[in-house]
Length: 295
Image (cartoon, rainbow, N blue to C red; front, side, top):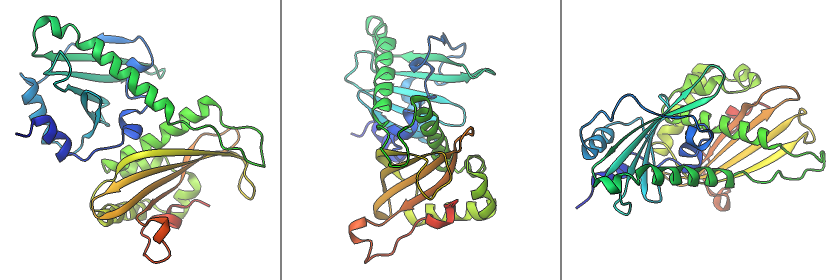
């Protein structure tokens, strides 16, 4: 018999651990000791009831990580973590709400519901901290070494890498839940000039329709370029994400972000390719390509 947790993951399409759940701002536990108990308990009386309620929501992003099933509310900065049977504290749920202060510091407020025996429940938060540690480690693995280019000996600094990838995370997460205005606000001024908001929304809706839904992200590669030839000076990050999508046999998302000297990162371009490069010459390519190309 299919469990509620299994239904939860099946009904709500899997969103890449890399892009969503591993967003470096998604867990204050992964960054700082600012961790307090939430004044509010889990809303529903049981773990099963909590799962059932979340299953009905279409705005949540989900992933399987080890012995946990995770769901994230991007807008409210909430993560629910449900145990699998392999953990002693099963069945349990941990809800983490991230609060961002005026100075940018983050605090995690934690609420838990454990239905195991007391001795096993006492292990819940230790297991959850291990999960957070694993998420942080896997997030760091996705940051590739800067690619060497002839035009510059300098690569991206660690801070530049983190800021650029956080921008990509926010951009794709906003698109996934159709917060198009939020995504549009993250794009470069030159892109906005060539692509008005109404056209941008139309293109995003077309991509959604062509693919039959949101992509599920599988793996990511990041390529760094500083001051490349024949382009404005600055730092470029090209993020290539292999994905799957309901109506197409192939999917690759490519997001390029750009930071001018003494400026900040913005999204310069987004492509979603539905054609395998090996057969590209024989098949039609459906992507945003030049439409979202700011250059």
